[in-house]
Length: 246
Image (cartoon, rainbow, N blue to C red; front, side, top):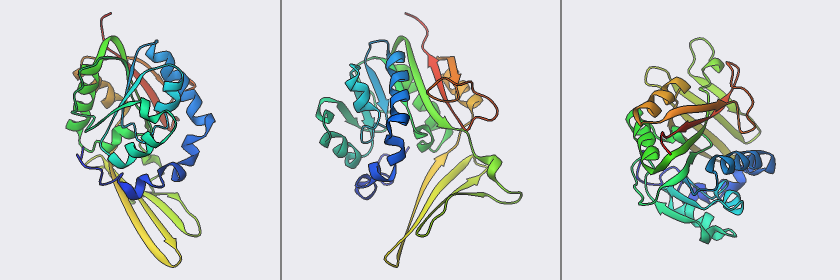
């Protein structure tokens, strides 16, 4: 994972909450926070990619002590500016390699953030780092999309994800390298802007193998935070791996 905030710097951080407003709705946040609070079992939690605190702040309000790791000072500045934000411990760094001295009952990574780690080796390192920060019997929870390859037309490598009068977005896949990018175009007052963010998509079975390498075992996999069954039609999943012991 890049050790700078190139993709989540000041320009993105300034409007991140507004541009992702749907993800901040109580109907989205509350089930995730309930799930994570139950998974923490009254112990402290560590969020990989804490960002502006979409999940960390309401989770802390439930009484779960939260520490966060993020590469972006600009995103963390938004977190600290919010009510309760200055009470959450944060560390600037790459969550695949940054080491803390504390141990946690829960490590979690939400909203496809595992895909911001753009190499397989980096994703394996992320799992190993999560395991290293877990107490015995602690849990690592990941929320991530299923790769949208079904949306690819024959011979094409792009899927249109948003259209409008002034905003467009599409995902571009490279199946040979298991990489993709999300691309955003916008026209404001006749001036156009373009932004592209790289990802590495990852399959559930591959995640399970990464967990096994890290010494974790699969505990559960759900379609989402409300624990609907995960099926071949699921567009994403919430997976839980547990550290032995305890």
